[in-house]
Image (cartoon, rainbow, N blue to C red):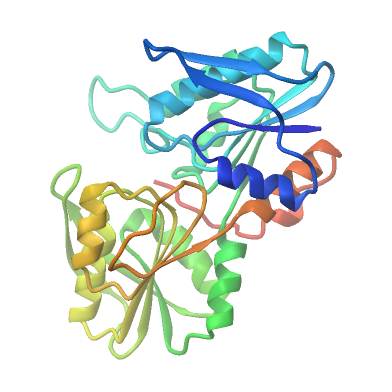
Length: 314
């Protein structure tokens, strides 16, 4: 078994290797002056079980193309099996035709991964679980909830209510509420544009309780900040958010700085510099992914890692 990394999230790749006590593979990934990606494998991989770690966070297209080229290089170097380890699966929000004449890009990406040489995919907290069915190769879909739930249980938050920021995240919120033994609430929202949403109402008892918003991804932080504002106005004592993939562009960072959110809990599936003025707790999923890689290599069951049977459905 050998583990290699693209350039999107090398710190996470190193943590994964440390967790399973193997060195990170030697591979040079560079760019030509015209922007084309150059890949060179600096060690023998013939007959090896290869795992390529690459988060497809922004710039998404660049990181995907880098991964495709890496997989082609390993395939041509006669690797026996190539597993694409994608902590954050980009384009997951484009999983269906929700209006005329639009693509299903999540399916296109699945086709490209297979065409590039992937024989298996390992990913974490997909935005839509049905994306697993877009592949004709095995897909192991893990959840960050065992990591985040362990942190939240240590905090021992009293009068906790788990809040779904929209109807689509209700299944994920329900699973968290069962894990934490908490009540459940839903925020009704209306999307105004790609970066703006309006939170209209809350279904559930919030008055005098500590609210935890759970979601799989945020970029502009519009949904989570609007939900936090409405929860505070409705009498919540403390409002935190637990989000698996916090991509956070400039708009999202500014919104978080101005929001009433008390804490943002997220994971290291995507790299992110420190943000002044926002309390962000970053939990590592390296141990979880490392254990999955070890079990896949040994052809062992990964069933016990699928502890979170919720997830987002739309």
